[in-house]
Image 1 (cartoon, rainbow, N blue to C red):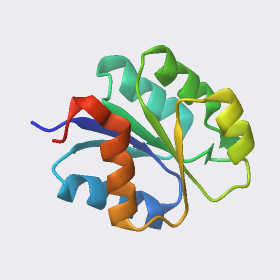
Image 2 (image 1 turned 120 degrees about the vertical axis):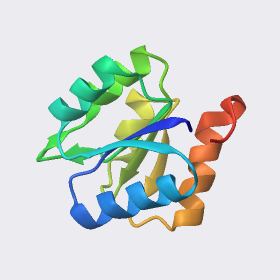
Image 3 (image 1 turned 30 degrees about the horizontal axis):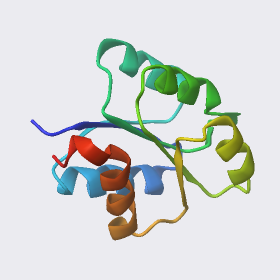
Image 4 (image 1 turned 180 degrees about the vertical axis):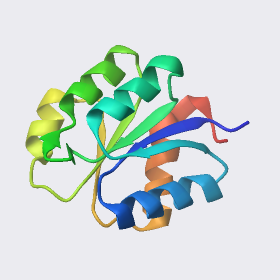
Length: 121
C-alpha cells in the first residue's frame, strides 16, 4: 500500500483533480474533505503521511487542522488561491505553498519534496 495523503479541498474541481493526481502517482488518498471537522476526524483514526490543504475550507481557514497536523509532524502543502502566503509562512514555516491551479507535475514534485526522505509510494 502507498503512502497516505490527506486532501482537504472544498472546490469540487480542484478536489477531484488533486485526488486523481495523487492516486495516479500511486499514493493512497484520504478525502477529499470539504471541511476542517471531517478532515480532523479522518486524522484521528489514521495519521496521514502528508496533507494537501486548501487554506480556506467551507468559509473558515484550515489553520486548526494544520496545527494538529504540525503537532503530529505531518508535512503540509497548502494549495491556495489566496494572497495569504505570508501568513501561512509565518504560522507554518515548515509548510510548502503551491498556487491554484497547480499543474499535476508541479504538485507531484511538491509532494515528493515534502515527503523527502520518506520516499515515494
